[in-house]
Image (cartoon, rainbow, N blue to C red; front, side, top):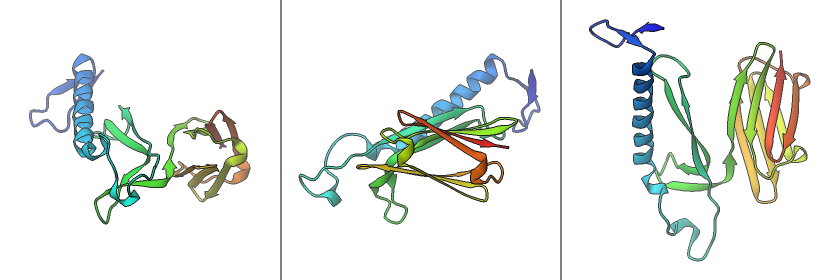
Length: 176
């Protein structure tokens, strides 16, 4: 399969064979380098001054790398998750009380499947709300608190949504 590279001034064909794969991997490595450069403040150990000496906090930070999805030029997408974020106003790294779970969305012909990782959460601890095409997922059990808003591909009602939970893996089916 061959694809015309719109960004090339020479108008050469770009193969999605080995060269296309290597190009995508190069894009991935560049994005990970960018992420590593911006995440330097998150590495290492030490005290966060706002918490004071001897006070403990629990922080979770990770990222999900998606390759080959989206529009041209967006082949690699890095999505962070967890409760460690950069405060937009001060620019400082903060640990939030509520974690953002890792979520995958799969669009099928007859349904949309959402899979969320929320360790420690059971179906009784889960709260789902739908407003137009926005799904809000939240859960709380003890000190573990999760919150995520997702834009769905279309509008659903709560009657079209079914949920299952197994060991913190939440599956949400939105039936068309």
